Image (cartoon, rainbow, N blue to C red; front, side):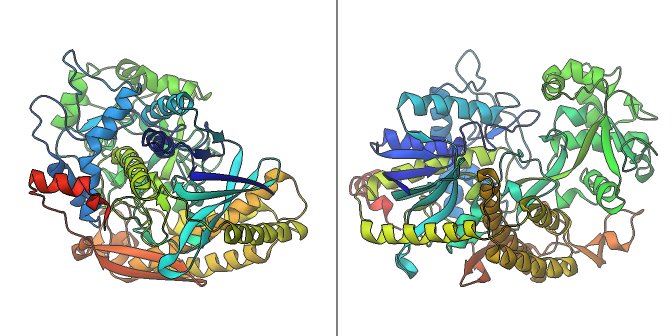
Length: 638
């Protein structure tokens, strides 16, 4: 077993992990390494949207903004700790300008001002973008910075075990067990582990996460890391042949929504029209989906999210397929019948003409080329869509220095860190990942420079873990594709944007049965690729069981619908006059917005608890005192 030893290991190479590596190096921690499946893998470098947003502090003209005002926007989303909201706000400008300084081309005017626009859940104009691939542009610039600093990158490795030492409050991370693409086991000893493994993309069958990205939160859950707000995810309409959010201009050009039989050809018809009083009302809602892309329970009854529900009914309940067709206008299109908001936008954009494709070509030709780059030609074929998992607002619980609340020397950064609450402004996840990288690097530099691992104890833990893998390889394994399809289907049916308590109860029981089956099953003497996927299944299956337990716990607590999911209840509020009682929903109990749901898997059981969220700090410091605390490193206490 090949052994590596570094001061700090960065697990993952998305925008957050790369930023953490560069910031550590800038802080003087040079003995570091990045462990990754590949610099071209992961969500950050493989995803985007119509105009992928980076959310930051307002920096234009007379924007009336401040760190406290930005923190209030984060905090007001509900179920978010106040100190985390303030940190994400205070470091927003610093993290943003760091990206600018290393070459990310965010737009600015002739005076150097960074212009902004409003995004979802945004009271001001804080959002910015450098195009549909903003996160990719961030990664490419950060990769160049990693190379410039000669930071070692160990590619083609898959982490299969997070290693820890100690018990209770003295539990700490000490390294990682990994497997190479050729099937060799490697061990990495590290004083600190920055855990930048991304969101739980591999948990869902219907997903807009890149297929290449599965996530690895299960590795941390397996060793007892506390998580928070796991049920709070985002879902939205996306294409499924090529996974991409159909937000922004894709909706604003008013495509036809058509439904077909399962063969994708027969029994074609426009299915939305019968649910709206007029074609104008229908098209106005479609237009709003461009602004209001994420599914939002508050917009289900009389807002644009009714479209997500109707697509879900067609695809999941009826077993049909749904497409957006840009080649023809919908029946009865009359621009003059649109709401003033939709009409004025299209008029100012000079697109009150032609087909949806012609309007898209005029407003955003790059949106057409994007699909052509993936062999999808909107001029020749409709675009198949579904309601897909897009982002997990929850994740691992960490303090205001982004260190795990119960496993020392473990720093979850990026989407795997559950700092967000119920709602968050669009693009704030990119800000959060950069801020987390700054915080983890600063704390490691200030407090964890010394080496404190007992090498003998570490080697013993590593050998024991490697023996477990060797044993799995010695016994026959099953079909990893079938196993993965099982838990992904379970999550998409029971743990996505439509959640029914009775179905969740059965899903939790089935999830743990599958976990226990995978624990007993071996990998077998199979190809390295298949062995890796078997090992990946084990942590993904555990993660999906823990997620479902937390979702069921929240549903049983009477939270009701909120965020990006609905809880059907025949005694609840009606969703639409043409939908039956099975589409009535339990209203939200808003008192739960002042609570955070903590989840931990320990000794084979999952424990869920509501904790009061920490308030938003109100700061009115005195310069001399703050300076003294900074000089004396008191800021790192607590």
